[in-house]
Every structure is written in structure tokens, then in C-alpha cells.
Length: 123
Image 1 (tube, rainbow, N blue to C red):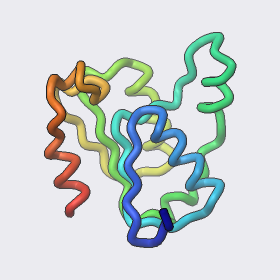
Image 2 (tube, rainbow, N blue to C red):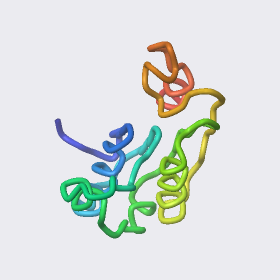
Image 3 (cartoon, one colour):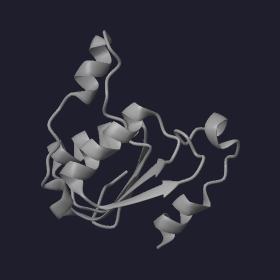
Image 4 (cartoon, rainbow, N blue to C red):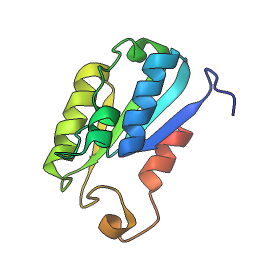
């Protein structure tokens, strides 16, 4: 799919790390970047994840993305909260913390519905 200044990118967990890295490398300009339960902490002794998650965040992304929104939950894991702080520190944006959503998986949320995300997309 072609990416343009009207594109909305949405990532979940490790997908957030991928999108942020890609935006840093590609220098694309997009309308919105929505990070849901962003993750940037590799598991110990996992070489693949260490290589995947360990990269400097290009802080100029915030000048090429019109709006950055990050979803977290009050009951997200400690490494998820740490990851959120890493991304927010580099990119800024808006943090939305919802109650009882965990890592935003079906198991944690017990539903496939995520109206808050839809609202942010359509705004």
C-alpha cells in the first residue's frame, strides 16, 4: 500500500517498535501514528528480540507525523510501562491510559471491541 501524508499507522506491542524504526529509516510523512501497548524491551537471552528492539529512536519522527497517540493500561506489565516511557520520551504525543486493558490482547480485555481506538482513528 502506498504511504502518504494522509496515512494512519497503527501498531500493537512489537508492531510499534517496527513502525517507529521504519518511520525513522524511511523518513515517511504520515497523518497519525497510533501505538497500542508499545513494547521496546527485549527478553533476556533472546538474541533475535535484542536485535529487533535495540535501535535509537529517530526523534525527528515527531516532525513528520502530525499526531502521535499511545494507548497503555493501568495494569500493563512493568516492561510495557517502561517501553511507553521510552517511546514517549523520544516522540512525545498523547498518552491514553485505560483501566483494566492489560496488554490489549483478547485475553486481557475479554472483548474484541476497542471503541477508544476507533474514536482516535476517526478524529
